[in-house]
Image 1 (cartoon, one colour):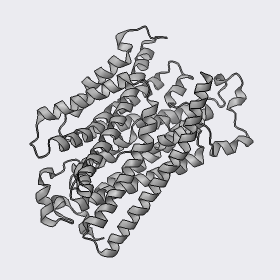
Image 2 (image 1 turned 120 degrees about the horizontal axis):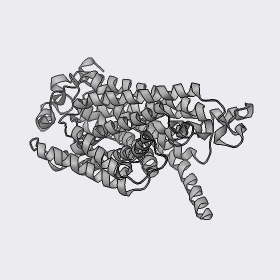
Image 3 (image 1 turned 60 degrees about the horizontal axis):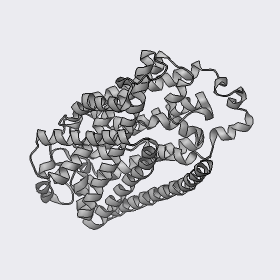
Image 4 (image 1 turned 180 degrees about the vertical axis):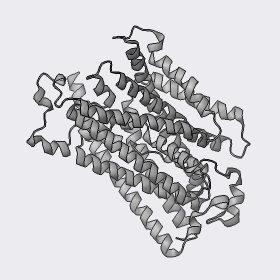
Length: 460
């Protein structure tokens, strides 16, 4: 593949399979990008990071170090290749908008499938972030005030607090016209997560091992020779619930094309480098946080790592700052996730119309209002993590592979036949691997869920 295929620059939409007609048809979506390479890396990394990092130590505790590493690296590789296929699809389809790519590949059903996938994925992600704000912010405020128990004040009510955060922080950032402007807040969000990682590593060196206060007998936390197999490879009733956390770890696909469209001097190769750097950085952070969190508490680590630390430190200033930093990070991630939802709604309902600030603001406010109602009235976050993580992320990868295959096979390509055949074969192989991974997850999860439901019904 020559270098011209990666040099879209000012004529990105006029290159590829449709020649001049492509630019004429999609001229309304073309605009020069203004976001730098670094800002794009910050935005994509922030979209990847999310809140799943808090549950990775629990995932490692229930899979073992070796299996966890294999699964996490495997998901990272699948994510990288799916981004590659997505960028190839955008070039061959001549559009940087998901709905238009779906329409070109499968007609109106493809357009609606793309719209539904983005809406469900990002609504679920936004809800998970707001759930963390709802449950964590009251605890942080209570700890800073030195209160042993909540006394019922309004400022300790999570429902009120999530509304105030949405109106005071998330909504103003969501009203920005371009996604590239959020690069600064994304950089600050990532700095908060780096601080979280540094404290997790530091606390590992400070806490004694074993930790006798978890149980009456300290031997429950000791690691002897017979336990080493379980340390590196485990499978129990919670394993099925941890695998979706890993599948959720690198979901960023709805944000890829919006970030690509605003990349300065954009090219497919440059955006692929943005993706490579972002996913590699997040992989390193994930591995370090999971490893040190697990080696601190071993099998006693909870589904949310910070909650485990609170059993050791009731009013530790550093951990309070960490919890505040994590809350800041997930709050600043919400506008990144909101942008693709608004873009999809605008494309579906207001395609071809001039930009309107009134419409721009009303759509953002409506999305936030819906998510706030969801967070207030849905009692738990567990179903969102499991369902969205297992099915939506895999769906993004499978759909991107199917779209690439469809465009290469049915629409034609500017590449020679051998190159076209190679891309089609890779897309097919990737689709089969993704489907196999999805089926294996479903096969592993279903018996465990059924068993737990039976146990719960018997106990009740």
